[in-house]
Image: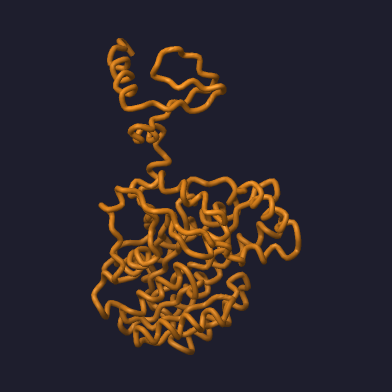
Length: 361
């Protein structure tokens, strides 16, 4: 099933209307139940900062109509900010703006913008400046992504993701940054990337490359523009279930179910939790933070990075055998080919005795 869906995506990418696949949002599968240890890591979803933290301030959020962008807008508005949300879909933006403004009592403005177009970015920033003044908080959250074997990537597919993620972030950041410099006005910039911006990842290569570029951009500007009162920080989210992201990256739900086993906290993140972190990084409580990359993933990256971390599975310990397993003694379940052999807790105790009996280096 998963292979068929990837092939389907690849076929779409080779056709002109491949953008339809990017925008479809096919997440119909119910989320898997959290693992037992998640009871030690309960999500607290109310705003953690004091009311009025952003009173008198303006926040601009790209991709603010849905998903993580919507969650960040909601928290910033709740904390007193006047928000401006931008994306290509004005109807979705306006609905979000009306709902959040009605709930918080603070104005939320919706402006249409394709961040890939630098001229459109300049016009939009001029609108924002006329409407609210230059923002005090800028969140670059707009993104585009899909799963696809790299050998099936078209130039157009690569360019679309790179234009949205890297170029779009650069256009918005530089246009606003230059105006802030001229007005001698400080501001906090935040970019939302991903944990694989650091490590790279197959099957999402355009996104991995573009997100890594965003991180380099922000760390560079933190060094260069800090003297002008501008801060730049980055959040690398792990798996957080949103309709758009999971629809394009995990249409069958199989990846999400497998992901839980890699997260020490035993559950996926919540958009509201990320919104709390974002609001902190953009607030004066974090005024000494700049050029920072904050990993927010329940421990997933650390779990995947450790070579022996699979040994955590008590009762499901796996020993890799690159060749067919021919050991006759009971601890191992025989395999017909190279792969992973499961070891029970009792067998693990026996292996520990063997390890202790080894002498020398």
